[in-house]
Length: 354
Image 1 (cartoon, rainbow, N blue to C red):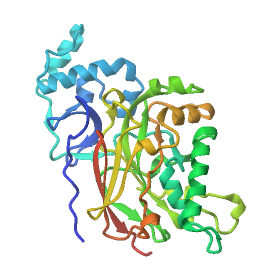
Image 2 (cartoon, rainbow, N blue to C red; image 1 turned 90 degrees about the horizontal axis):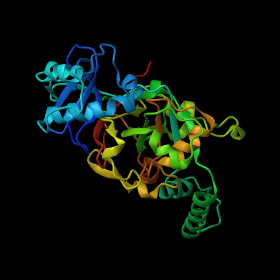
Image 3 (tube, one colour; image 1 turned 30 degrees about the vertical axis):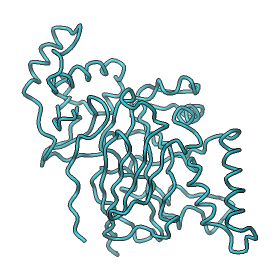
């Protein structure tokens, strides 16, 4: 099955988004993307030849108004920077002809985080489906009774319990249109499309009410999982093995864009959709999350210091391969989208046997 990657599209909410792009045979650059399908190299616009998206996020409060002004310039709206300095005006002149079409550029993962925090068992219906799929053969309950009991546990957990957060590896991240290599050892590779939070201000021991002020924006992540290696078979008491099951190279397609938080009215009301070879598998609202964005960011920050560019993955909704009895295989194409954040397309390639 030969499938061409989807052409990059500037389809997102708000006046601009951020991405990491590259012209053919050129080094990646941090880009300001506007809905008209044009891109500005921010190294030039912000006069920082070493700029990356992560470095930009480290200056988020300072640079955000400037990005808005540049986007307005690029779309022909307004006159540039309000109350800007002469330096800003000079930069506007320098970048007036520096916009280039998105078409023809390669889209990389939008940011290289230092830390990746992943939330598990965070969608009510998803957890119910997984619990039913893993029921013991001698479970005396009917499927209906088991579902009702699990649903009650989920509701109690949302009201009384804590989020479940673990650590992922940045080395698993790949671009939103890159092929995903399925390792030979992965017996049950599965998809998990989810909303990813991008940190913009350092966060340590922040409250739930403070947490959203530390969010720069949102992007899309497909947190692939090999279901066969989630639980240790040799020592069940150890429990889950997230290193093995989730962190193969390329197991986290990310992007295409970081959309600023101000452009997303409510991260708790977005549609998460994944299609496998054109057939819809996941189609759920983030309303089904047990713990919302603010709760997850606050919880992770109670233990760890979250840094600009870090990711907080919010968990996967219902509709994974285990639910459908259909796991990923060579040639499969996944199309994932989230309201206001754009879309990604990745093709699965079986790893050659050594």
